[in-house]
Image (cartoon, rainbow, N blue to C red; front, side, top):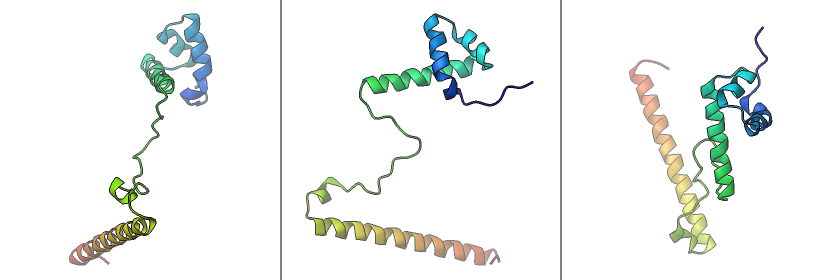
Length: 115
């Protein structure tokens, strides 16, 4: 009978206790029905995270960082009005880019005789 699915992070505290007791990675994996590679990768990720925490580095979240709200340093030196003009101009450029993409897609679909 297969075991119920649990994410490997749910085993974290139990796995760390077994590691402190001196069990090998393979033995820990066998206890939880995991392969040696899964267990090894878990400890690798855990150790990397702990090193970042000790070094006081920010933990990286998944996905690409958003640069929408970051203004260039040259713009940050200017007054609020200039900053808002920059933001509005960048939004206008984004809207024009989307309009061009939309037009290109519409042309493509009309050439392929799709509606």
